[in-house]
Length: 274
Image (cartoon, rainbow, N blue to C red; front, side, top):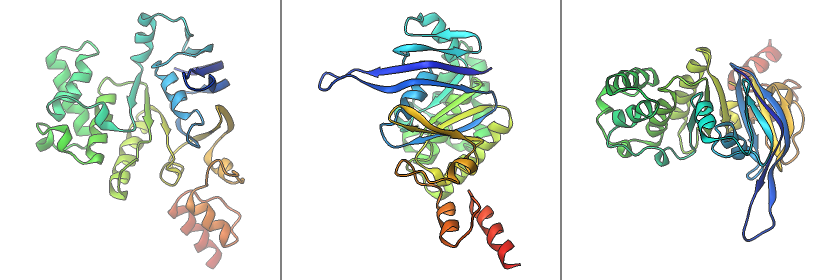
């Protein structure tokens, strides 16, 4: 499955101010199996882009081609539901999408919502909870008694229980400590290796840049850079986005390379000292 945006505009309507474009004449393609970081300043259009992908909102103008299925501002709900079956969405604040009495109930609900019977939903929920790494003794706990990291893992389980082709995440590492971040990255890497396409909106460049295949940088509703992260962060980004701290440190000691992770930076320094 591939996705193509064709001259997509999204007009943000405001009662207090003039209407303005959140996305302006956006054209790009997304290929199956990519792991994409979407970055940019607050208000640059990142989350609007994510919501358009999941058809939570529709383009004001232009169209989006989902593997041959065209979506525009007049697409009927029946078609939108068909497209949504290919997507799992994890919001920035997981507590806003968790509402069932227990962890297991919450993930089961997502499976039931896609037409599975109770037995099928329970089986799928238990399988994905094990894959995500939620311990069995937590399955009957209230989701609201969990840590932020655990809640986000449950939200991801609910998004993945129906085996979507695309996983969309809005600020997936927000509010998490380094241990929880590393745990989350292992999960995302695992599902990416299984063939899932992952698109993550994030300000956390340090954490995600080493993992992704592609980075897309937004500014004022337009894409200003779209490439692999090494090429993007090898050039100055002005005030739009700061490069990973490893890149900044490498520049400060005179390295011309673009190490995206601590391991890459250590290898570069070791090579100099040999």
